[in-house]
Image (cartoon, rainbow, N blue to C red; front, side):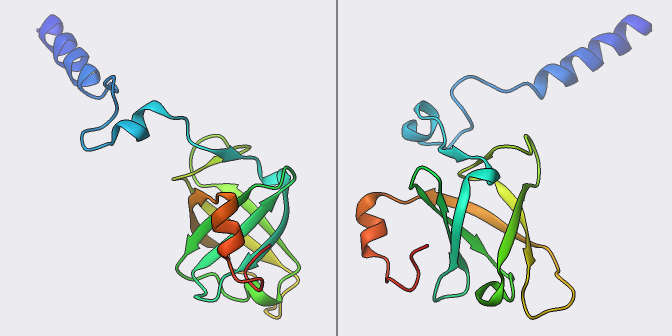
Length: 136
C-alpha cells in the first residue's frame, strides 16, 4: 500500500515538472531568447503615458521599459516610485513579470500600492516615436 501511494505521489510530482521547449503555444522566438530584465535600483526616471495605463521607466544604461497598469493613481504628481517583484527574485524584474508599484511624494496622504506588468523593452525607434511628454 505504501509503495502504491509513493508511486502516485512520484507521478503527480513528475506531471508538474517543466517540459523542454516551453509551454504549448509559445512562439519559437519566445523559447529561444532570454527575456530582457532590469533591477529596480537601475531606474533613473519614470513617466506615465497619456493613456494613464502606460508607465515608462528609464534605466542607468539608457534602456526604456514599458509597463501597463490598470489603476496606478497619482503617478503624474509623485516624486518617486518603488518597484518590487510580485513573485520570484525580488532584485530582478523581467518582461512579462507582474510588479508592485508604491508611489511617494504625491498628493495622496495614503499611498496605495498598485500592480503593473512589464510589457517590453523599447527599441531606439519606438523610443523616438514616443511623444516627448511620455519619454522618461
